[in-house]
Image (cartoon, rainbow, N blue to C red; front, side, top):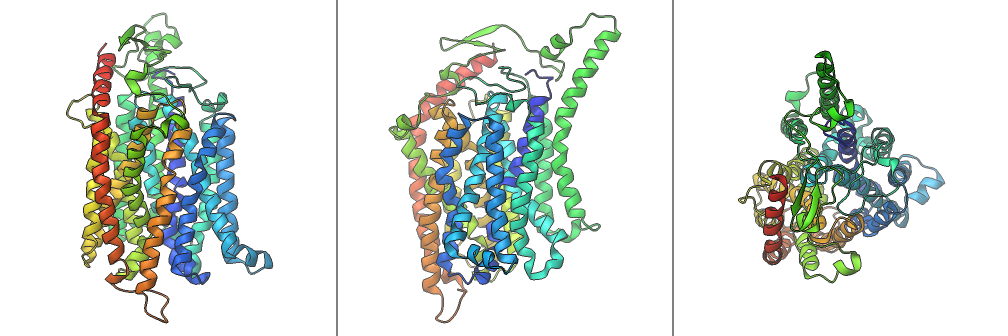
Amino acid sequence: MSSSNPLPWLSLVAVIWLQAVIGTNTNFAAYSSQLKQYLSLSQLQLNSLAFASDAGKLFGWVSGLAAAHIPLWLVLVIGSTLGFVSYGLQFLSITTTSETSSFLRSYPVMFLLNTVAGNSICWVNTVCYIVVTRNFPLDQQVAVGITTSYQGLTMKIYAVVVDELFASWSSAADRSYLLLDALFPLLVSALSLVLMASDFSSSSPPSAGKGSGGGGEVVLQRCRRNGFLMLFIITTVTGVYAVMSSVSARLWSLFRYSGMVFTFGLLLAPLAVPATVYLKGKFVAWFLSSGGYEVDLEEVKMNGGGESGCVVSSSSAKVEGKGVEDEGVEVGPLLLVKEEVGVKEMVQRTEFWLYVFVYFLGPTIGIVYLNNLGQIAESRRCYQTASLVSLSSSFTFFGRLLPSLLDYFFSRSKYLPPRPALLLLLTAPITAALFLLLNSSHAALYTSTAVIGICTGAITSIAVSITSELFGSRNFAVNHNVVVANIPVGSFCFGYLAAQVYESETLAGESKCMGMSCYRRTFLVWGQLSCFGVVLAFLLYNRTRVFYGKRLKALNSFLNH
């Protein structure tokens, strides 16, 4: 997999598209109020359905085990099929009146379908993480951050399609989210099977310190900066458009379906990276051949043919007593990871429990807030729910991208805080935003939503790297699914609290609660718990700072060799 090989970049584009459509659980806030009314649900029942979507992550470890024993392409097919069936049946249940649809509308069945739908996301995410980490092991945070940032745009993408294609459905427009949730991931997965064909040539993910992409070749590259720089520009432009079009949609309605044209055009833009890498390699080969030089095309590819100034040396370097080579390298554990452990050993580590509870009391609370954003906005008489949810999606997008920008520009700087320190710095604003929600103004609502979206997205992005750095990459697929299992637990606990307070503040005979009292006590409790999360984040940073100091020194030694 050389710098001029476009296949890893093509796989990265496929992962970007998968991430852009797979965050289907974020769409729940857009149609939750209508679902509550249509199915005659109480607030507690509606909250349980939101929890069910997250509860699927409790079984996310199954996809990790499957990825170690069956081909990756089959893991992707299983994930997309589960989503298609679960969301498809939900859509049929509320759009038809047959006896079968009546059975599907029963609460236990809806709960089960939401659980399966949530679990389907884990299968697709597992494939995405494995493909990215095997193709870009030295640029893992950058690649993961760019790709997962697009999951923050899922709500925006679906909202644009619903607004422009299904607006004529009137009251049924919100139900169309379920139809799109079923179709989009399935169609994009089918396309990804073609784009990531080289990654699917091996049946299981690589072991720690190794990668196999582009037909199974094991390579680490120092220079991918040009490709990532292009992706950063494209991704940033996409995010700016998403925010601006959410704030002032009318300014971007230049013609019919203009929103879809702009949105899908920006989603196609990352294809420019593999195209540029491929054409540049061809041009270098042609230029040298036309000058009368004898050229071995494979040698050109391996020696900078794809990216200017990127020459891959075959020399080796010693890092912390481990042999490291530029090609076919096996990177020593002191360079990339603290230790290689499985789930059994991981749960015995103090760092694991600190890490999980920081996640639980920080971004998980943020996720629950975003899941309930529709109800929260309605209770505060902010009726631009779709715009607010779309805006939160856009800020989550930038939050997921932020760690990658820092890693890209300052990864070798001693001034860049280690990832546990970033975890601390990002958890504190979530706490402040929760307390700011006690203010009744719409400005406080929008500001808090933006802060929670950015910080939650950023932590979600860096969590992937923290898991692999602290506990190794050999068992990453299972380990990380165990870590994120805290999300459904938090979704139930924090969501149940919010629903209980909401129900208790609802006037007798009314189906909805209106006013600040609906969530005031909830925000107070969430804010206090988040304060404790900040303390735990500091303890985690203190326990790992020595390792991250050594890691930075070893990485600089390797890259400067």
